[in-house]
Amino acid sequence: MTNRLLGSAALALAALTSVAVLAACGGGNDDAMQPAAATTFTAADVTFAQQMIPHHSQAVKMASLAATRAKDPAVKKLAAAIVAGQGPEIETMQSLLEAWDQPLVADMAGMDHSSMAPEDMMSMSAEMPGMAGEKDLKMLAAAKGAEFDRMFLTMMIEHHRGALQMAKTERSNGKDPAALKLAEQMETTQRSEIKKMQKLKNG
Image (cartoon, rainbow, N blue to C red):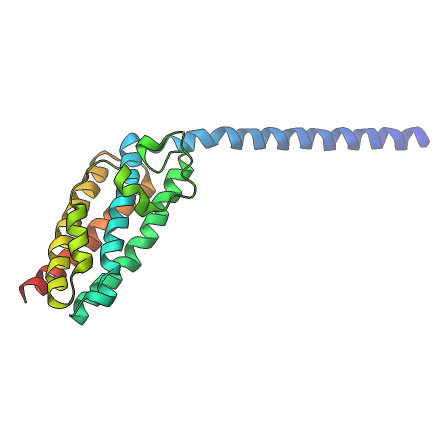
């Protein structure tokens, strides 16, 4: 009887060991699939995110000025929408680059950028379509009332047009589904905002 019990226990232990080994192998296969998933992005996806982060950051910085400087309530409302929309998009692009194990800016490879704010990266990025110059930014920050409204609308329309060029390039050359979806979202939103700003500017 004792021998039979010991034999049963040994068989049970062997079965449990086999299950554990299979589970471990299964886990190993899951891990091995992770790099394959990471290959869904391309250099175009990385460039899109790296450049759009400082591009968006400048738009947010410009739009944030409207709360205390704009005269037209419609301009204030539109500027607030830009801040509310592009802030989360910046976070999404930062998350994508982190998932891809890529630096926030191309020339920052090997550098510690963990504490760097997106707006601080603007000077480190290559010139991008629609980006405002430092002189124009200072003039916008110093303007108030109707003058601010005119400057803001003019600069932001140009800024949005630049973003549309970048989004179009991503949709043509990118591969990552999340990045492509984000580019499409940007095109839809910013085309609509350009129309609104042109109407405000001409009205």
